[in-house]
Length: 420
Image 1 (cartoon, rainbow, N blue to C red):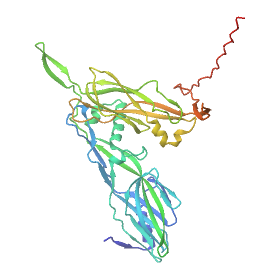
Image 2: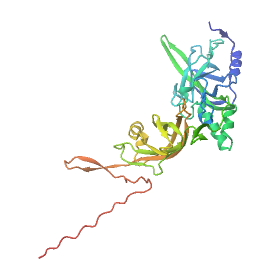
Image 3: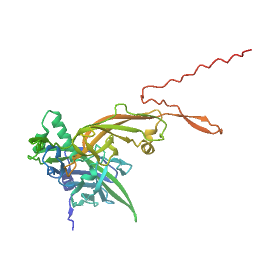
Image 4: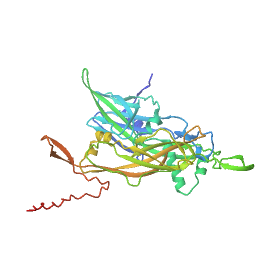
C-alpha cells in the first residue's frame, strides 16, 4: 500500500524543491489553471546501452556491432503540485520522448513519442494543509527498435551514434582498426517530458481536467565494449598450381562505391505523374557475396531491395534502377503539390553486404548522396473534339529546372501559285 505523506505547506514546498532540476537542464514547462508546478529529474548516472562485436569472424570487414539488449530502463523522479484549492486533486501523468505543448488545457503531443503512463509523487491542498502521496517510481522502458525509427531530433539509435563517432574518428585521420579494438564511450541529449493532469470538482458527477507539463534535457550514455581480437590481416589459403606452391588472396566482399547517376531525372510537370520517376544507382566492389540496398529521402526510407548476388570477377560495374514513389507521396503531402514550388529531396544510398563465406550481414553503411527535385506546374484546359475539356501540360520537359523551353511559331509556307 502506497505511503500517504501528510505535510505542512512549508514542508511541501521544501520537498518539491529537492526534485527540481537545475536551470541548465530545464528545457521548458507550461501549466494550465489546475496545475501549479511539475518537477522532473533523472536518477543516477549509468551506461544505458552497451554495444559489442557479435561476429565470430574477427576480420575487420566482418565486424558486426550490435546492442547487447533491445531495450533499457531509466529511473526518473517527478513531483506534481496541484492548484491550492480543496476542490482540486491529482488524476494522472504520462511520459514522452520529445517536446509537447499546451493547447488550451490539454496536451498537444504532435512530434513527441509516448513512452507510457507514469506515477509521480503529487501534492494536494486539503483546505488547511498540503498532503500528498509518493510515486511508485517504476522505471521507464526505452525500446531501441521503436525509438531508432523516430524523427531525427528525438531518435535514440545507439548503433547510429556509434557509426557517427567511428566516421569522425576515421575522418580525423585515425585508424578504424584501433577504434574497433578499444573501448569507446559516447552520448546524446534528448528531451523527456512529464505531462500531468489535476481535476476540479464542479458538481456531483462533473469533474474538469486540466494539464501541465515539464520538459528536461536528459543525457543517454552508450559504451562500445571493444574487441581486441579484430584484425585487418589478409585472409589467405595455400594451394598447388603447376606443381608449385602459391598463395591466393581470399578477401571478403567489400562494396567500394554506390552512387546516383550524374544526370538526375528531376520531375517537372503535372501532379501527379502517370508513372513514378526512375532513378539509377551505379555500384562496384571487390569479392563475391550478397548486397542489400536502401535509399532514404531526408532520412526516411523510400526504397529497399532484397539480397542481390554480386561477383566482382564477372560483373565489376553494376547498376540498379528504382522507382521513386512520387505518386504515393504526392497523395499524402499537400505541401508537395503546390504549383511552381520546387521541392528538394536529399537522397542517400545505404548498403550492407554478406560475403559468400559469411553467416551474417555487415552494418548499414552510407554511400553516395544526391539531391533530386520535383515541381508541379499548372495545367491548361483546352477544348477537346467532343466540346469537353482536357488538360494540356504547359511544363517544359527538360530536366534542367533553370531552363524554360521557348515557344517558337513556325513561319507559314507561301501559297502555291497557279500555272495559269
